[in-house]
Length: 184
Image 1 (cartoon, one colour):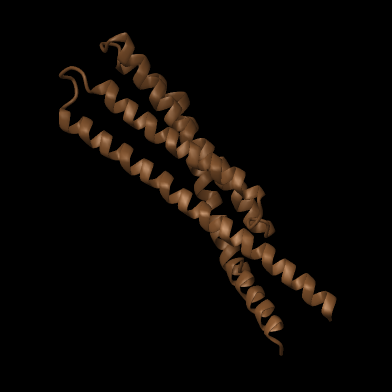
Image 2 (image 1 turned 180 degrees about the horizontal axis):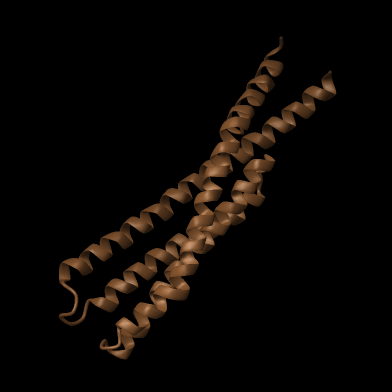
């Protein structure tokens, strides 16, 4: 067996282990169930809980009331966008096309939505900071949560770079396979 054949077999075995049928189907199904439940819950929160939050904040100044409700609503939208993008990526995993340039669009949208969530969380802290209604420690905690959410965006960005490497390696493996097919 030549070095090129060994390399191609190695790449094929890694590709199979990454997209293993049993693990892949079970993980995809479990995550899809979680996404459906999360989307259903988020729709409930948007249609029932956000209006109740509006009513509960009747004593708050109008600017605070509008800001808090808008931030909560938009925060839920960011989670829904992430859920839809993850669903699309799961579809690509099931089809075996996740290691392609098309996946970058969804990963980039996820990064943007997570950054938007971090900005919204920080905006909530800024909205709640003035006055005596919310303790300064609570505002500090919300700022800390905003920082953690921004860290998640950085983590997803690092994973995007790993995806870029995997796509490049997959293209290289396909090129090597084509060269091997020509030789044989």
